[in-house]
Length: 96
Image 1 (cartoon, rainbow, N blue to C red):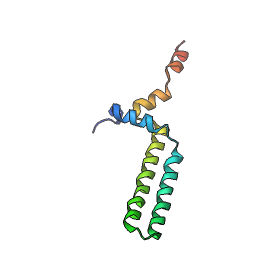
Image 2 (cartoon, rainbow, N blue to C red):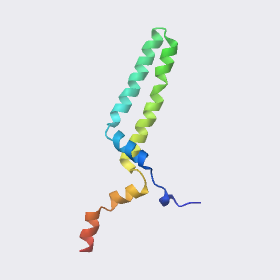
Image 3 (tube, one colour):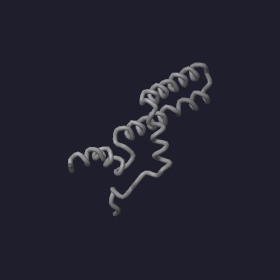
């Protein structure tokens, strides 16, 4: 079995994660809640198919928000995590 330390994120994934990390995590939560409220309103308005369409967005938005939060906390991959733990300035000051 391959060592986990050898896996790296691709350039596209890093770019996407850098851009989405700028969005506050609350945005995903409140957008999901908004789609639930919209879905309920449409259901009460007897528009069942539209209600189901918007209602199915909530779980996806919550999962994307969770992924976004994990990337913010843990970093992209092991290489990124190592850079956070051992910045260049910190290494230089300990060797001097």
